[in-house]
Image (cartoon, rainbow, N blue to C red; front, top):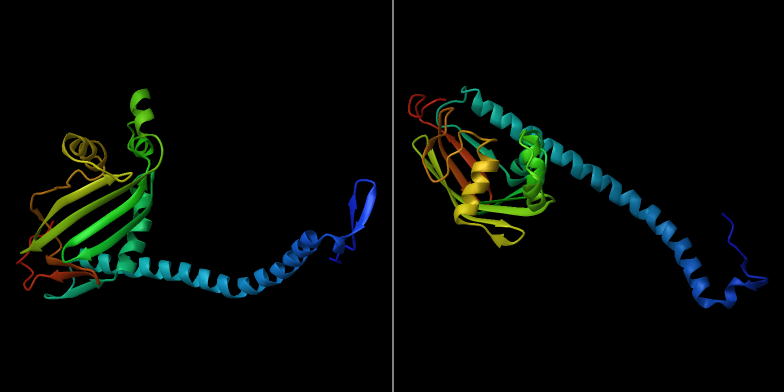
Length: 230
């Protein structure tokens, strides 16, 4: 597009170069257009590579989980999941569980210590469960809120226990009766067999789950009969 030589101002016509600010602005847009094109040559391949990487992490994690659930892994096998694989898996699978949850992420803080976070619209979650909240409850629950749950996992001998250490909604710590209400209302309808603070069987011959900042390792029992199956 040819560079404009004049700028019409009401009934007058003034040369663009007599207005330093307008001239500088014009030069900026001409220059930045070239910069954007140059940046696109670098940014777009990186963006698509990241998207493909997330997809491959999900495929890798799902393949490993399928192999565990097949009950065909050799005794004493160790299946390792990277944080990237687990985050890709959680981000994808959470969409199939309920509406109203997005940007789910996991952080592995230390031995056995995991923090899960997401943006949650509790009213939308209830509707997806087939239980639309009443007028008052919908006013209290409507809208996305940042939610984080920090929990400690201990496991061994084919069993595991999850102890919730902290729950925060919009930066406010939730405990006592309010926490019980959230578990009863939102967690148990989605996961009827969920157990918090009590041992439960891992199943699929899993003997132990080792959580570290570098990722998670699932250990298959030394003997197929050593860990109970579901």
